[in-house]
Length: 81
Image 1 (spheres, rainbow, N blue to C red):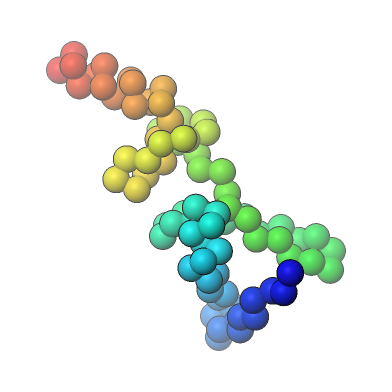
Image 2 (cartoon, rainbow, N blue to C red):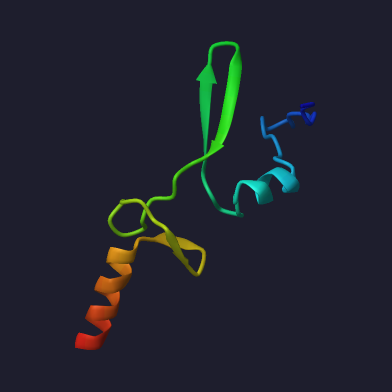
């Protein structure tokens, strides 16, 4: 598999090609993890954390990661108001 060549800009930034972002579900505003592996650098999608509790978030609301437990708690709070 041949890699895709990219140039680091003057601010040290690197753009990830759209095809790769789409394939791995990386959206605008998502965090990525950069890992130093000796002679290699690994860039991977960070597991989204819930905006409220910090747990694993499987859902998004208006682009923000939220877990099912917190969504249920918000719904319960809304019904109580």
